[in-house]
Length: 201
Image (tube, rainbow, N blue to C red):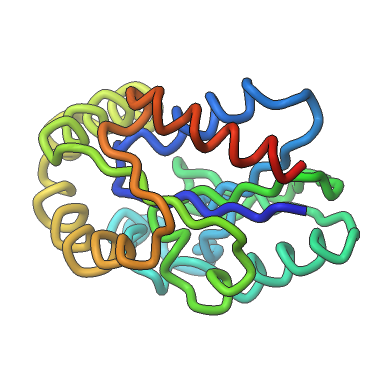
């Protein structure tokens, strides 16, 4: 089994890189663990306060559960991956049943942040992109997919995303075995990654 961590700033192109890797590999060989699925449940927090939750801080994630699930997959055991709603900021009652596969990809802004999780990874990747490009993608995504106004997204970017990126996400770059500039547009890097993965299957 090959365990890969893919990190990078919000809107850097991580999801595109992951999608292109999965598309280039044999069907059923890859299992994806989105870090977003492992946000701590906030159902106990009053609804009006949930919008103030800092989703870009390491403390927002349930690292112990994510690490335990990766360890279980490595041992050949299936897991029940949690699901999370951005609209309600709560963990959902439904889970996703996941069987172990040849390749496990952990993808998220802080996927390389946790020391225990990093120690389980065979390959660590940081997807990099220009801050202006990331901001444009964040606005497009949050307005369309998460029902936020452009003004609210800009305010959140200035107040939370940018400082959290500088404080926690960018420093994770030093742990990466490979840095992919230009995100999902860097086909050469994606091809190299895919060749590396196929070699280890």
